[in-house]
Amino acid sequence: MGERETIGAFDYVIVGAGTAGCLLANRLSADPKNRVLLLEAGGKDDWIWIHVPVGYLYTMMNPRTDWRFRTVEEPGLNGRALDYPRGKVLGGCSSINGMIYMRGQARDYDGWRQMGAVGWSWEDVLPIFQQTEDFHAGADDMHGAGGEWRVEEPRLSWEILDAFREAAMQAGIPATDDFNRGNNEGVGYFHVNQRKGVRWNASKAFLRPIKNRPNLTVLTNAHTERLEITEGRATAVLFTEGEGGGGKPKRAEVTGEAILAAGAVGSPHLLQLSGIGSGEHLQSIGVETVADVPNVGQNLQDHLQVRLAYKVEGVKTLNEQANSLIGKAQMGLDYALRRRGPLTMAPSQLGCFVKSDPSHETPNLQYHVQPLSLEKFGEDLHPFPAFTASVCNLRPESRGEVLAASSDFRASPNIRPNYLSDPADRLVAAAAVRLTRHIAGQPALQKYKAAEFKPGPQIDGDEELAKAAGDIASTIFHPVGTARMGEDPAAPVDSRLRLKAIQGVRVADASVMPTITSGNTNSPTLMIAEKGAAMILADAAS
Image (tube, rainbow, N blue to C red; front, side, top):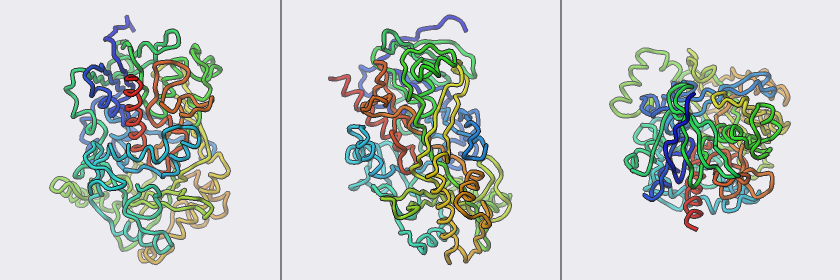
C-alpha cells in the first residue's frame, strides 16, 4: 500500500459524515480555534435520486450510496438473510432513508436514565430536539423553529390511506396530527424531513452552510481503517483515501478526541479493528487486543416490520400508476411543475401507533402504511391495486451483534440481529397480524373489498403466524445499541459518550442507545450528536 502520509494534526477527527457526523462537524468547527477533520468513506451527495424523495428506491443497495451490507441467515426468519442498507455518502442514512421525523416516546428516554444514562431523560433531551428543529408550523411547547432540521407535512394524500386511517378509528384507535409530543399513540400522517418536496438531509442542513470554514476539512472517499492507540490514548486515525478499496494510506493525528459517528454497524466494527472488543473474538480474526471490552458489538436492536399486503378494488394505488407510461409521465410532470405528487413520497405516509395488548403502558406497535405493494424494495410493484400495512414491534426483546469478520477493514462485518429469537417477540408479531386483520375488516376498508394476500387469511395460531411473519418480515433499518452508554461496568461508553477503555475516544451515534427508541431512529441520532457536541465542547473548556 505504500508509505502512510500524515496529513496534519486535528483537535477533533470525526469518522463518518452521516446524520451525526455532519452535525458534529458543524458544532465543533463553530469555534475557529478548533481544527476539525470529517472523514466519509462514501462520495458527495450530488446524485439527483438522493434529493427526489422517492429516490430511496434507487439509493438503497446501490453501491454509489450504500454499504450494501447483508445480515447472516436468521433462524427467526426461517433461514433468510436480509439486505441491510446503511448510507455510504455525505449525509449517511439521512440521504437514503424514509425521511420520517420521529422522536420516540418520553418513556424511552426516561428508561435510559433509569438504566444509568445520566442526563438523558425526556426532560433533558426535549430541548435538544427543539433546538435543532425547524418545524413548519412554528415553535410551541413541543416544537422548535429556526433550527437546521426542517420538518414538514407530506405533500400528497391517497384515498386508500385516508380509508385506512378511518378504519383504524373505527377499530378504536384515536386520530392524531402529531406523533412527537411524548406519547405517539394514534393514527395520522407522518411529518417528514423535506423542504418543499425535496429531501432534507444532514449534509444540506449542517455541512453546506459551513463548507468554507477554514478550520474544517471534509474528505470523501476516505475509508477509515482503525484508530492508532498509544499508551491507552487514541493518537491518530488511519484511513485510505481514494475510490474503491484501493487508494493512498493516510494518517490524521488526533490532539483532542477521535469521535466515532459511523453508526451502529460502523462504529463497533471500527473499534474491533482497532483492538477494542471481545479479546476472544479479536484473537479469532487475528487482531491484537488493545482493550478487552466484551460488549462492543453486542446489544444490537432493530425494528422488524411484518409486511401485510391487501388487494383492493375501486380505489387508486401507486401500483397501477407506476406500471403505466401515462401514470409515470403524470407523476414526473406533477413533481417538475409543483414539487407535489407521488415523487415526493416517503416510503410510508400514514402512521399508526397502538398497543398489541392493554398490558403495555404506551404503544408498542408502529404501522407504516403504503399505497403500494411489492415483493421487496428494489423490485417492481405488483400489477394490481393494493396497499401494504407494515407493522413493527417497537421494543423488541431480541438482541443481536455486529462482529468484525476479518482484520481487513474492507471486509463487511457479520451482522446478526437475531430477529424473533425471543418468544415474547414472536407473540407480539402474531398479535400484530391479528390487529391488522381487525383494522382491515372495518367498513372503511371493506368498501374497497380489502383482501389479505400476504401472509394469507388461512394462516392462524400464534406459532403459525410467527412463522409466517418470519417469511415476510424485513428490517426498517433502525440498528442501534452496539456500543451502549451507561454507568454500569458492562457498558462500553459512559453517559458523556466517552469510551471507557481508551482515552480520547467518543462515540456519538445510534450505537450508544441503551434501548431502541419507539419509532424511527434518524432524528434521535441527530439529538444524540447535538447533545454529544455540547458535552465535547464543555469538557474541553473545563
